[in-house]
Amino acid sequence: MNESESRIEKLIGSLQQALFKRIEKQERTNRKLINQVYTQMESLFWLEKRLALKNQLPPLRGWATSPDVLLKMHSHIIETKPKCIVEFGSGASTVVIADALRQNGVGKLYSFDNSEEFGAKTLKNLELESLENWVELDVSELVEWEGDHMNPEHQNNSSLWYNIESLQQVKDIDFVWVDGPPGNSCKYSRFPALPAVKSQLAKAAQVWMDDTIREEEYEICERWSELVNGALTFFELEKGLGVLVVSEELSALERTTSSVERESKSVVSRLDFGKK
Ligand SMILES: C[S@@+](CC[C@H](N)C(=O)[O-])C[C@H]1O[C@@H](n2cnc3c(N)ncnc32)[C@H](O)[C@@H]1O
Image (cartoon, rainbow, N blue to C red; front, side):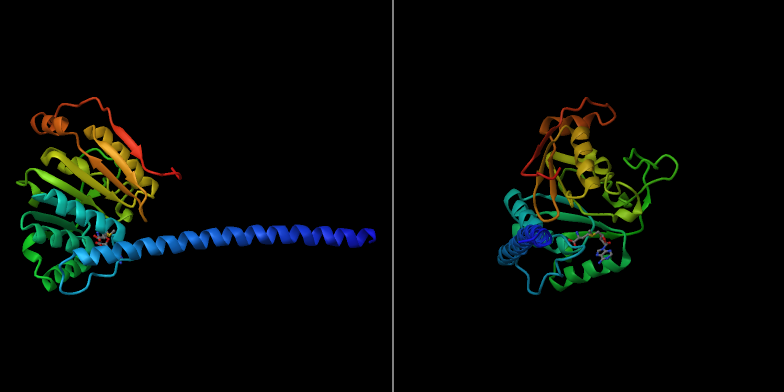
């Protein structure tokens, strides 16, 4: 073999190696995607078995809550029988929560949405299932948020939040589901969810945040856990889920001395969250 032939052979060898690496990487990605799809199908299968609906759920891709979270949430509500639930960002989750409340035979969901279009769709879906009496659906424009915020531009350019006047008389909120408002309303748009209802939380209330694979939602959960001294766990579900369990003693303290600032001692744990 002459010199140029051996150079060509080397070149072919390294091209082959690069190609094999590429194929292996693509195969790993494909296996991961197939697993993800399978997991969602499996969750949807079990979710449908547990729901007592006459019709079908709205589509569960894109903006909707993923089947894995909906299944976990439905089971949580059936197990814990919350009397009072607040939801920020309505949709498929509203129907699933209302279904669980109806199966429990007790409880009320206060759901907030800022979009007339999507709020109307939610109401229609509830009515199709005769679930509207389990939900107070409040659809109105976002308003200026007066409290502290994580949005760095908050001082100069007020951040927005749902108009929650209708929640004023509501006490002992057991469960809060945070899936709105959309991120284009301002930076860290979901941050006010906890401060907005902090003084109305029941003992050991749980606050669940969707989409914690996004940095903003992840950071908000960490800040919340400092605010209420709660135990925070991140679950590696399709879009990531943050679950904050508010400390019993401190939520009681919060209800009686809401103006007193406390030192924070949060407990943060991550379940298999390699990425972060
Ligand atoms: C993340 S979505 C809430 C999804 C809801 N929790 C569910 O399970 O379907 C947040 C808000 O986005 C709006 N929204 C819902 N679907 C949308 C879409 N396809 N395009 C734009 N906005 C949408 C609604 O106003 C909704 O409250």
